[in-house]
Amino acid sequence: MDAPANFSEYYKTISDSELLRILQNSEGYQAAAIAAAKQELSARQLSEAELAIANQSIQDETYQQDAVEKMEEKIRSGGRTLLDMINPAEGSQASPEKMIRLIAIVLGIMWLWNAVTIAPDAVAGLDSPYARFRFIHLRTLVLIGLTPIAIFFFWLRTKSGWILLNFLLIYQVLGSVVTLVWIFQQAALNSDGKTFVADPVTAASFSIFWVGVLYTLCRPGIRKICNITQRTMLLVLLTAIVINWFLL
Picture 1 (cartoon, rainbow, N blue to C red):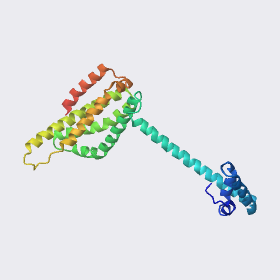
Picture 2 (picture 1 turned 45 degrees about the horizontal axis):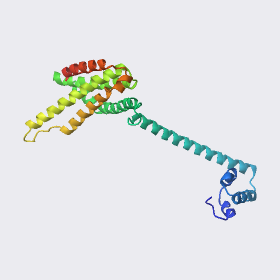
Picture 3 (picture 1 turned 180 degrees about the vertical axis):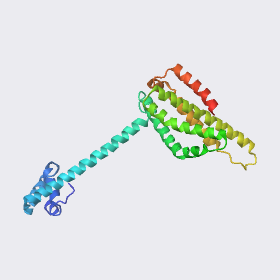
Picture 4 (picture 1 turned 60 degrees about the horizontal axis):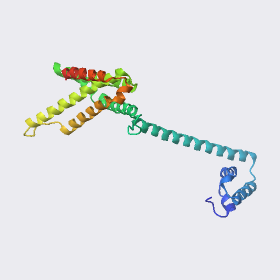
């Protein structure tokens, strides 16, 4: 106990509820401390109403402490659950499930960002006098519209979700590669450095990211969960490449 050696003097400074709490939890205190607490309680000559108020205060404090501990446990449990969801390195058998969650979460965040930043410009672009530009903006809106559907059904581990998400990923892979090639071509033509050319490092990073996500989806563990055979995977990839190549 942290109280001074003279328990009697110390107990005169504490509240009624603190004094009662000591007596109610006597197993945690020295015999001399309990004796001094009983003596102090007797000296205060508390009425039944004052005792009831002190006991109610103890109950309120206990309730609040329990509520805080439960909240802290929920936070810790939620943190462990979130880490368990997105940490693919923990447990080889659970890795595919965790990777599905991680991919869905990351792509969902990216879709939300695109919906806020890109979609408004794409809508405005539909009024362009040039048919090619209108087609590009319409294609962008269709992509943004289909992405949450693909993510949702992929999150549910459905075959259709896997197929649709792969179509969209193939589009992103081809689009990022084409963009990267165009950047290098423009950089070669822009020898005077007066024309703005996009950063090839950023474009290359996106290309690597999309290829990595596509590769992860095509791994046996995730395909098995989504009921995708190797033959179905090859057919989907080939079909998606052909269709998306004509859409670019």
